[in-house]
Amino acid sequence: MENKSNVSKYLLPVIIIWTVAGCLMPNICLSITEDLSLVQRITNIVLPAGIYWLLMSLTRNTGKAGLWMVILEFFAAFQVVLIYIYGRSVLAVDMLLNVMTTNYGEAIELLGSMMPAIILVLVVFLPPLISSGVAVARGMRLPKKVLGYNRLGSLVTICIGLVCYMASFFSARPFHPVADIYPLNVGYNIYLAVERTILTSHFKENTASYSFGAVPTHPEGLSELYVIVIGETSRAENWQLAGYDRRTNMPIASDSALVFFKRAISQSNTTHKSVPMLLSPVDASTFNDSIYSTRGILSAFREAGFSTAFISNQRRNHSFIDFMGEEADTVMFLKDHLDTAEAEAHFDEKTLEPLMSILDANPRKQLVVIHSYGSHFAYDDRYPETTAMYLPDSPLKVDRSCKEELVNAYDNSIAYTSDFLAGIINILKTRKGISALMYTSDHGEDLFDDDRDLFLHASPVPSYYQLHVPFLVWTSEGYDDALPGRITALRQNREKPVATSVSFFHTALDIAGIRWPGHDTKRSVASFDYIPSGMFYLTDHNEAVPLKACGLKEYDFAKFNQLGIEL
Image (spheres, rainbow, N blue to C red):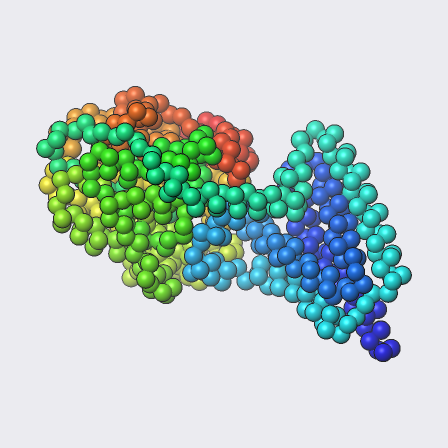
């Protein structure tokens, strides 16, 4: 008994201290990385510390209390990994939704390249949980006197935190507890994520009676074929057509029928928001009010008499993308029946065969939307090994020390995307009638570009590299003869800034000659009426804020100014 008592004497206090310290790691990190006043930083550490301490002091059975804290430790671990990747910001709604809409293979790829962060999380959070389990199994109890001291200490700490909390409202910087205090902000974001998931699940029934009122305006006998490609994680900075010094866009770079918009910006750095905005008339300013009740571009084309098809080289994830894709006459999710290994080797060129099958049916008016896998991490899995132009392109780890390999693999994926687009163009050239191809990416990517060491995308605060995307339009040889003026307008507008989330949908309908009551030629880069607009960012809480006010840093402003976009 004496030996058990000695073990309890030392183990139980260690469990309390270690558990509280682990749960407090995100508070300490966020108090360093976030834009808070001094008293707000203190509040974000002291008040939660007191609450964590009190929770660990609710019972003499310290082991049981430690196991109760597993949920808080789980989110703390998640938050630590998030800060490791992005360098700042709380676990956001979009991050939670990304977790729910990311397939198993993607998650394994990412986690497998983040061993330092994984090891840190295991070292910090596993020992107190294991020790708590041991304490429960051995029936260890904290002495009542020691428990009383812990409760008193925690309550004093909470009182100090509450004083700081009240003082925080007198800081020059506005203070919002549900946004600025961890884990209160995470709890609120979880609530929003659940709410949005429920709303999204009712998309089909909410849009059942929706109609664009779309009508065709092109000559009735004209044979028309349009292909829209939505890319993944392709940033314009690494496109030869945008001025990159590597040959990443051969052979499409020499195609005179192609118009490239080098000043194109996405309004979101997340796939589950940006793609629905590209495929619908919804943009950042209307997203929160309209996305749950508005159909997509495939429905508009169907109303105008087009046969429609949706081909995806991504797995279903029960998102707006799936639902808008399923509005087509023909729906193909090519990875539906593939195992993880087969899916990762299923390159975007695999969409060309079903594309040709659809076109061989010889519809007079046809729209095909292709959702590619593009340049999603891990980049070296997005192209056949034999096509790699830049080496070494492996191994890939989430670490600046691997920047050369990461950039080489990323550039290879961009070059492969260009070859993929060239393949579609070659198919279109063999078809009768007029045709056009539109391409853009959902968002860009960070590649350890500056001293912030940012990597990947979907960070709660975006960067220039995550928002600057490629946008191009290709038209067939007979298009200008059949429909004069639009190619001239495209070329006239090619140097202007473009918010793809605003213009992509309207441009597609304009090129296809489809009109509907909400059509706005000022938003179409295929119109002489085009006026640049929409330099906004859709925040984690679905608010449209000016791009200059979304948290960009001085480096980002310099890059936008260099691009020719004044913020």
